[in-house]
Image (tube, rainbow, N blue to C red; front, side, top):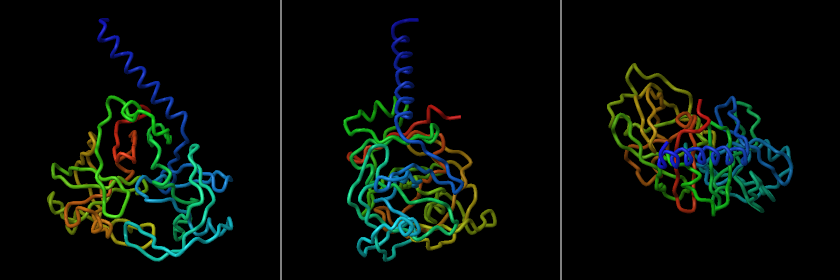
Amino acid sequence: MNRCMRISAFAAAFQLLLTIAVASAGEPLRWDSTGHLLVPVLVNGTGSYLFIFDVGADRSAVYHAFATAHGLPKGHRGELSGAVGNEAEMTTRIDSLSLDGRAIRHVDVDTLPDRPDGAKIAGVAGVDFMMDRLVVMDTGCASVALLPVGTNPAGVAGVHASFVKAGAIHDGKQLTLPVWINGVKGMATLNTGARATMINRRFAHATGIKPDSPAFKNGPAVRGATQRIIQSRISPIGNIRFAGMTRNGVTARVVDLPVFDDATWAGGPAMNLGLDLLHNTRLTVDYRQRKFWMAPSACAR
């Protein structure tokens, strides 16, 4: 073996060890029967309780039943914002929320309407956990780590990761990225709180997809944080490319979400990139710099 090959082999082995170390140092991710990814969170120093891990939620939240059962005090009147629209809310006051050693203190979190499916989920862990950390979410290794900001993100992400300089939406912290459906370009929000990928009708029409055709059927109702319902149409739509990944034979929902109108690409081809396209994927996010890296998981089966 020549010197270059030895160096390459060493680098690959080192990267694998680094990946395993980060995965083992974090917290476990659990795929719930609802299709969400859940993480253990301490609330006011007790627990842990299962929260949806959502890189697309501006701030954390608890469900109303959880707040009531644990006697959490009310905060202030505000507006709950979700993919299907906004509505008035009374926030919940929490002394501390902790995930993987990262604590946010004395915060008002959103109060979500209770889930109609009865799932025992306490709340949502949002971007407020992630703003001053390097986030490593590995769906293949089933782990999430919130690393110190001094950590080298490219080194953690790995040499095979694709780099994305993320865009933004109006009045939101969500990360956006370019996507291609059957070769046609659009923009997407990165949303690990969404179980299914959704595209708007303008994106569908641009790619020749006809959601009102017999090939489509009525899909499951789309519910956002507010639990309002919007009907969708669902069918296989072809292939999707994003962040160095290609997903073939994708089935997606076509629905015009109000959040698409609030985004900076309002009126253009838009997509909500959900968990269904992020299986066996390693996502490394630096929110301060609005950068992220995506690669296949080292634990991918």
